[in-house]
Image (cartoon, rainbow, N blue to C red; front, top):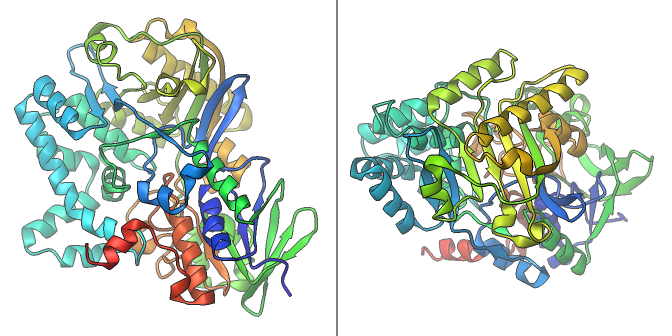
Length: 539
């Protein structure tokens, strides 16, 4: 008899979600986590005494209300904070900042009053074009992933097929220039959209293949106009999930490093830990990425088809970035042309210097040549402005995020370059918030290398496979195996490398756990969210 019904590798939010689903239906579940805390890359930690920082997933999330309700998270301390705005993206004096409010009416008013009618109409037209993908994304959140070729073939006319194909396979700038043809205008809007699109990719603004990331960032989650942060940081999601999982009877074992997934006659039998212990179960669910799972733990060459192994080895995980966590002695004061838009409207929790797509293109050119970009786009999030529990009274906690940190630097160079990169980011922001530099009392800098080593994620890629054509929808993680099952009986994938992809959503863990229930106990064992119930009734 097995020790457990299901073993889950990784206590990130997807692993914890899967444990909730399975334990609720009576399964004996063990979660094995290599660190000494829950959440994985959706964690909030006290990096400095009295200050809370969200690491990995560092800013607002797209957590659906129906998921929180289905998992009963409110009873375990989960609460979302209200933010007046999601972000303010800005450039130089003379360029009107672009503010995304947490209310469509306020955002529309901002576009009309501050950017003009033509710009507001162009933004609306772009969103209308992107929204052609919405039904396929929304309908597939809990069901079979879509296929891009079928999506295009289903369109009613050649013009629509061509429009959608250009978005999917073209570059970000190609798409934006159709709606904003003059590069000298609307630079903060197009810059912001470009930065959002290159997030989670190995692409530049002019690199073909931007559609998967653009549609994911602007359409997935169902809350495009309402980005919110849990009270207590992103890790509050994971903490609530962990509390409920243990309440339901699941066991979480920390500092438990899985060395091998045990397989006999093509079936999972359990896992072997680094300390030599073995734990048996007929089902193992992995929430780490596909390469780490199959090549690192599952004896790929012995236990998996050769073509499958080749596809796994081809997954692109190149995603260089830095994430600096700061403590501040007070609130940054945004001056000059930002004062009118930020100080007076209280939207300064997330500020990003992204002056234009061309600016990002120059940084991409440096990055692809292995150089540290001289002029990077810079994000800064100050969560304590909307959630005072994150820092001592009168103080603030902040995170700076920057794309395009070079890969494969020697260790000594890596250490010096990451600090230099953050210094450059602070220098840029201090031009617009002159008191920022003097406010900083502590800082620590993480890169994708830190996340690779800490959480066992290939390349430290928070997407578990960047958002490129060929790595999304029914090709995630690889073609033919996009619905959580694998070629090894009893082994399931349940992390961000599965459909519908990254972000703090709980969807991969929820879907994979329900598949396990269906296989073991039949379709009636599945749990459902309100969204699924609505879809099943044709609503």
